[in-house]
Length: 250
Length: 153
Image (cartoon, rainbow over all chains, first blue to last red; front, side, top):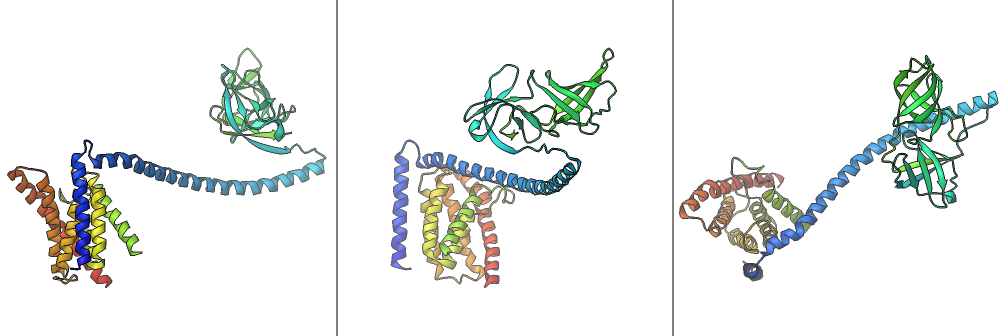
């Protein structure tokens, strides 16, 4: 056996013995101190790794969604082009929005009944009062007030909102209002509306362009004393926890 | 590169020993992955690697158990020393050489039992029911690894 190897062994043995002696004199053993020090860090790394795995999965599903959206976008472009050509032929004016501005929700206004949010963009980005606001799934609301770098968004969950809407399938018109639930009012008693129909904006009025998705019909209430039916609508958009909204510039 | 492989193998052996020894056990008997690593690294690669790795694994291993810090580094580096002492007297590619692995595992178990201060009855009971079967299982797994090494050769 080599002398150097024996010396290394002796050195390591001495270090080990030294550690044992120190440890026996400490009130709190060294290993438990080290364990306390390393354990949360190691757990942190493991948690980070788990989080990373989740992100990877989310990333994969988002990539798939992007691919699907990209395909839909291409179809949409074709349809848009066709539509514009037909409009030209028929002499219609285009009503496509000029621009869409994404904005992050930074605050929720503490109102008792109506829900409003503050977004991180304002007039400096070209946002104006009464601009339409949509979410990922459907109509979100409109711009109520504008500051230079922020704006207040009034959601559809507001007693003052009256939005002209139509049944996408049958083109039946009505006024969408909120009264603890969304209702499409002013619809003729036996109009062609069925549960599951999609309600979209009608394009009447100067705020919302035509065809923005609002919600789907869940219930049709036909009153005996009136000549109008009340249509209960479940919104596509979740108004309670939004992160990002899109302001449509007129 | 070899150092990197040794470090990775050491971590794997440590994790196997600490976290998965229950899962990988047969009945109540599990194998000692750390001794296996020390044995093969020392015999087939470098005695110094075995010595340093034994010392460092001992430090890490000791943080998980309520023995004096440094105890396992002393045990593992001493076992490496024993293996190196036998190295010149055996032919490492023979299955008979695994007797050294058996002795090393048995010694490690014996020392662990000795520091626990058990009564004579319990000491011998654990020696027969735990230490001896663990040494045998470790040697059998060592045989498998040696077989793979020979095949690779």
